[in-house]
Image 1 (tube, rainbow, N blue to C red):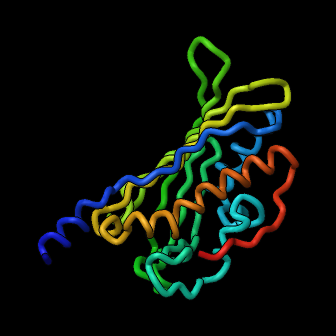
Image 2: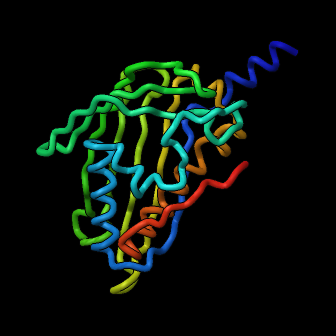
Image 3: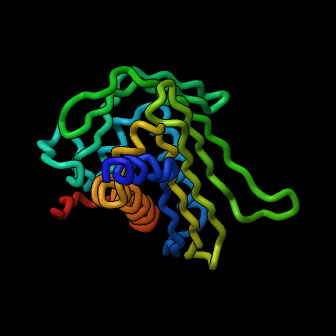
Length: 210
């Protein structure tokens, strides 16, 4: 029984992702501005994201998460940051908390941002930010926002947010933990990006309890 349990834990996937397709009721240029703003602030001044893109995530303070299935079971705390505007690269030092306790200190999150389009077409435009980590708890991550106009005032959006966890952390993250503590955050971020493009702002919201 112990062997079967250990095997099941070790077999948990290292890569987890959220993939969503939606339509934003705003021109492509507005959606692109929001994508550029998000990626810049993620790299250069991530605390600014709590004012709009991270609204509703409830991460301003260390939460009293009591189980690994809690919405706040895993949290990041940003510290030192460095940004190179010419190459659009960033580096942020983070502490990682699990169940309200700091497990890892001064992990470095490096990022690279690029905006691309097909060689022989104007669209879609793809905002792609890749991430690498200094420690073994995370192996990498990707933020992808692919945009193309549907009409003058509508934009088709394909969204991907993925993380590749290290083997130790992936063993901790069951499907329930992923859905309750992490996945909903990535979906909320997209909702906020679309709301910002459509209305010019993001209204404050409270996270719903699990």
